[in-house]
Amino acid sequence: MSDTKISIKSCKANAYHPLYKIWYLMLYRCTNPKYYKYHRYGGRGITVCKRWQNFDNFVEDTYDSYDEGDTLDRIDNDGNYEPYNCRWETRKENSYKDQITPTYQYDLQGKYLFTCESRQHAAEICDGAASSISRACKLFLPYKGYRWSDELFDEGLPEELCIIPKINTGGVRQLDKDTLEEIRVWDTLQEAANHVGIDSYGITLVCKGKAVTAGGYKWAYNLDAVTGDKAEIPTRKNNVIKAITKYEIVITPENIVSYDSAEVAAKATKIRLSKIKRALSVKNGKAEGFGWFVSEDGLVSSCDWVVSHKPLESFDSVVLAAKDVSLNPASITSVLTGKKPSAGGYYWKYTK
Image 1 (cartoon, rainbow, N blue to C red):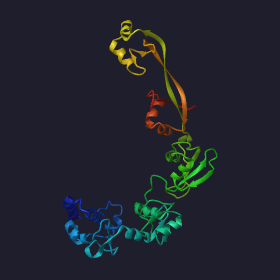
Image 2 (image 1 turned 90 degrees about the horizontal axis):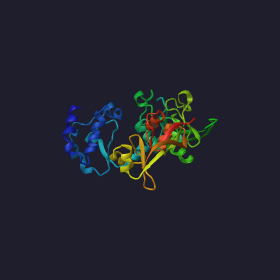
Image 3 (image 1 turned 90 degrees about the vertical axis):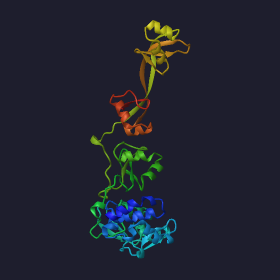
Image 4 (image 1 turned 180 degrees about the vertical axis):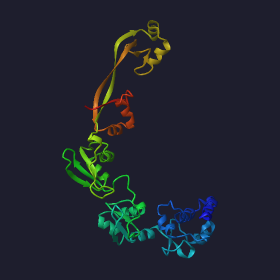
């Protein structure tokens, strides 16, 4: 393996050669245990012959028969990468071979269930798509409540291949928000969102217990990613998610005193002229504790700025509110806890 690494390093000057990436990946999947398919290559004894560990030799043996877009294929699937066991295939030929490859079905815990004749056969069994079955085989991710593989493991999939996904892949259930009665099961979250006419992100928040409803419905993942059973309807601690209200911030002047000019105001109040002018240059500006503005008749006025809040709309959670105004939820939380006066130009308060 050390010789291989030296060879790869020494050939970086050839990185733009059309065969370089093919050659590099051939070595990579046979020598790097971190590669997610290593068990199908180096892990079961497939090696690269000594001659092809040198890039120039690989080019000399293969380049004349190569056409752009071809993939390198081993004639004997149990044989090594060497001149007499490899050939070029078009992507179409490779795709066809992929479709007729036997596909093995496992439950979500990795227990072997059934052998399918092809990807298409597997898709018909689970009422899915052959392309999605192919992706599930390559990434060992669940699809339609099952796991899939190109290889047969009589004793079940190895534990390291039964990775628990971060999100559930078995569709979502649309529920009545009051009775929690199941209305319909959708194959994908996006289909459900399109039907109701809302952003799919809102449904995700409900499924993860971060929002109460979306589009007037309660939502839950259909299948549990670990057990394969119906997923529980999500709840948060104490089963409470606080709603919040967005308020318009209304600032009005009170105790108004007017002056003919900023200079007159500075002399009368003993406040530096530069500070008054700076306060006048910004909306709701202040100088020495007083608010300053220019009235419609051109007079410079000092005042007390009085802040009031006009309710606008309510949201089921901080997360939904933040998405509506394109803010970080933490900014709104800072207003709710009294650490900031506003966020996104609005005042926020828990809905009673």
